Length: 261
Image (tube, rainbow, N blue to C red):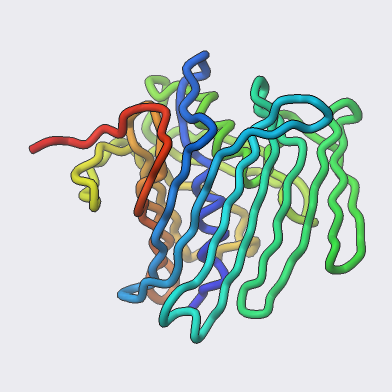
């Protein structure tokens, strides 16, 4: 079972939420999302994302903390304890600091990235291996978590064209900056624990071999309301599928729209 991929699936795919760039942001400090991840009939784990306020050098920031853990029966076979953090400014949504500290069945990483936008550089500190890497920043580079919130506030849903793609550059590991592409597949109504939810459906494309194999297919459903919440994420694997469903939420800025029969 490819349990190591579960939390990367969630945090990577969740970075593709769309909303109009306007004064009316899609989120606010205090927003908290909980996802239930499962492999087949096995409830594998839970993951959360929480938005907080912070400051870096006196500059107001959003501070988002993402956590993931295996629970119950799954933790007997494969223990996961992941923590992701991102600090990004409230005006331009530029990332200033990113933390990735994971332990997935004994596979560990302890990475911190500091972004210097005055020098257009980022310094990645690999604390586990005691190495540092310098990267030149490119247009609108985001980290794994800040991409989630950046895209929620910077795209107009009415401008989405079925079959067309959105591109974004990301930096979150020592492999450097890579291209992330998201293809819009149209609208779909999903049955959820909350009721029926109208969603935008997307197909994220990631570099083969980085997280997924070529035969794996990743799909993302995002609520078609002002929140642009990730409702479901599904990765079809060579054997079986991994799914993440929104389980709980709190502190949303806008009303979560449910289709009433």
